[in-house]
Length: 537
Ligand code: XMP
Image (cartoon, rainbow, N blue to C red; front, side, top):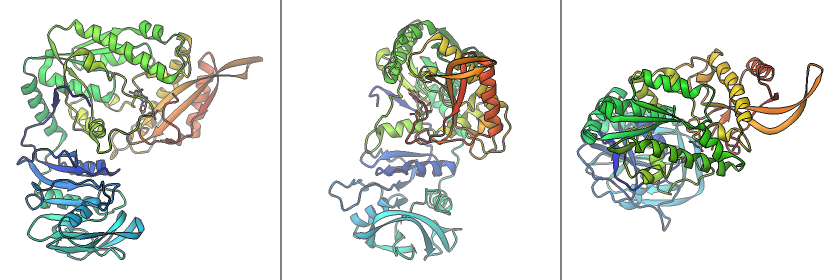
């Protein structure tokens, strides 16, 4: 993580929140998601970097962990300012941790318990189970068992196999559950978390897009004063929403730079630039496609292409930014999952591809960083964008990689290949946008999609470095192959291919082969991630 001065949007110091201490579980983020769905602001911090506990912290949640509390290197959190002083909820490892360190006992069990179990509420008067059925399905994932409860605790729920499935310590607001209320398979988990956050912790649930906008704009004004800020716009949701927020806060002191790297989709640069101008953003469009293509000449290795594109971008952006006198801040559209990954207990997960295209930019420019979306999940960014009045076409845009079509042309990038890919891609994307469908929206999970495009997380077109034989009229052809890719995902870490309607695929294939000179074959990629990735390079 960048060690420079951080301006992490802290809203008003008084924004009530729940602190989640992460012991490294795969599903810690889900606890955050569930709380945010209740309009409760929360932050995830590593168990060994507990922030100062201000009055705005209304409660604390301890996450699960891949460790056993009996491991010699098991993570240990210092709860001296928390337990008995604030409402506390231990989940899985968190429940075992409280037991192990506060007078109870945790034993290894013979078999790891993993999967669905039926929970029976023992203490029906417990605030944690208010409105929860007497028996309901929960999700277990643990190897150890809480054999003895911590001091002063009593059982409030059990399963057939696990007597101490949930407990409460008397005289304090400490609750613990062996199961995972945050995962989908715990049917009444949302109610339990609501009981904890809104009931036990007394949170008001006033964390909404509008309150986020008001708080963020106020705190940006305060922090930035009359300073000048530069922001790189990419056409993507995050940088657009960040720009509109900053524009609301500091107006003309924000200068946005939108670079045409020559690898964007058909007409994308002009259309997106026009939309930015319509929104009243102070934006400079920089045409520098020739520079990028020059740097890509003869380069075929995917990582080398990424590096060439990334470093050229930094040079172009920096040269443009130098022209803005007195700029002190660089704004970035960093969102919460990026932040959590960079401070996670086990360190950033291993990188298969170097996605951080412009990692060297802040260092090179010697500017302070402002990241107004640092606390938001992707769907929250979209909701904020909508509350800011940004057009749905912009907010609902699919993710697009920084190296753009440069990594969708396999092998060397040339003008001719770019022309072919752009034309084919345009047919595919326009086709998706105009095909009706009755599926949920990928951008707004609780709403129906406007069209096929909107139901898909990401779609794109690849130009393969393969020529094959075909016939056109009476002639033999020997031309390129286009691969279409459409996936559903929540975060790009895993993805599955979309079952596009056959009629749709038939039409798109036909249109591409008939209209795009240089293509005589179209394939559809039916691989999931893992083991494949979304992009082909
Ligand atoms: P993969 O191909 O790794 O992609 O499954 C996952 C998500 O990341 C995007 N992607 C990139 N984004 N720079 C980016 O900004 C990159 O170099 C890059 N490579 C892949 C990809 O489009 C998908 O959304």
